[in-house]
Image 1: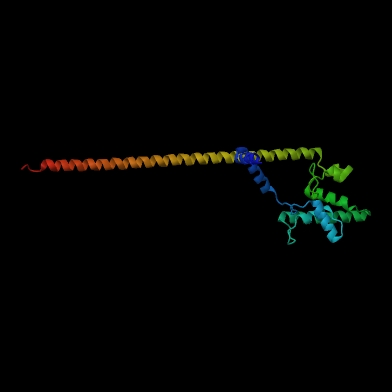
Image 2: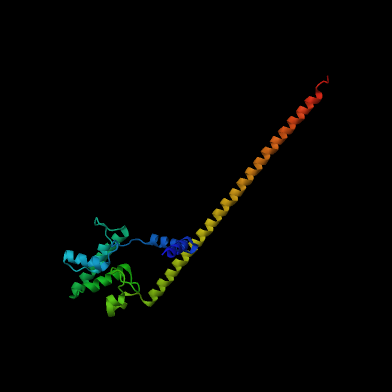
Length: 227
């Protein structure tokens, strides 16, 4: 265990570890909202809420639950905006479905989430937590909630552009830091050189003053009358 801890300390103290930390910080700063589930799984929260309210908990309701503070307010303004859009979109779909005489709430909620938040990401299903895949959750209909090939390509291009921009920003930041340190080092060298020259000038002035005093004393001795 000790050597593992030492390896971890060495890694996070290395340039690679610092770069990894900067990437993590940048990613967290870009994140507009997170969930409030804590260590509880989404499935557990949904089950607890279902037992408490004796009602079925859909994905939209679960989004509200997992993005709300203890005081009942949304965790961020962005989360509040998404909640409102989800409710409005759901109302629109329900109204349309009721005129057709068929309402499938699960399909409506799935489509609403895609409309508001975009297609599901591969290997994940929104508002379902970890380990729930689109194929497992949606079954044969999973493709309609996933991004198309062109969307996937565009998303990949966008992701790569973001990574490139982030990398360029980090390189620029490191270069600026290097230049700053060089400027500080040059300024320190110049300061020390100026101090050395000032001390040298002081010593020269003191020596000159002593020399002049010595010459004055010698002149006085030579001008004294001999007895």
